[in-house]
Image 1 (cartoon, rainbow, N blue to C red):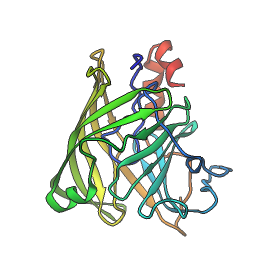
Image 2: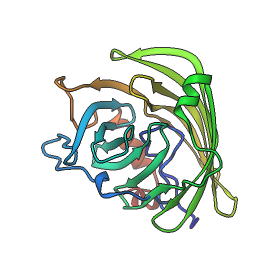
Image 3: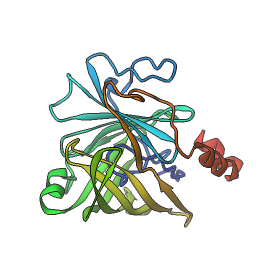
Image 4: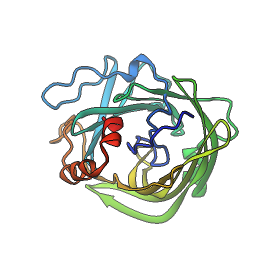
Length: 256
């Protein structure tokens, strides 16, 4: 790939997929949400918002489904303090079908003809799932993602929602086989929701620079509850701003 800085922007499905600024993503029109007014999320026409999740790391996720999608598909829109940052669609196996970094406009899609796609049902049934798949960006770049998700056996309840902890490891390579990003950490799954949720992770890029993040869920708001559709993140925003201000001007420019 054209050497791009890796900007952690926790995607919806698992912590094991990082948005790579400059690495790319491809999305359909339904990825674009409806109007966002006064901090309230409005899903596209034909879509229904199921739950809003306030996360650590100054983000809030909107999880919704659309009638025009394949049955089992789920969509996510992630907001930061500065607004909409990321959107995606996953399938019933939590495969990363398509997504878009709304900050830089780069899009990405799953390459169907991959060696071993991720499988949420395999993880549920056996406690372990490994994967080896490719994505292709709107800039033409192809990335290979190799890793695994494993249930640790630990269970927890966050804001009344039962979750199970996972351990994951992911290596992302360019088309030439060069290692770009290596990530590892812990995430959560919800069997009821059929999806991954964020957690804590460590990431290192090809330059040797390392990053730590925590995007664990804190609050869940379902239809009729306070905070449902809220787009303003509530947790760790002051800390994230302080970290951003410590970055070099060049990195700040790329991130913004």
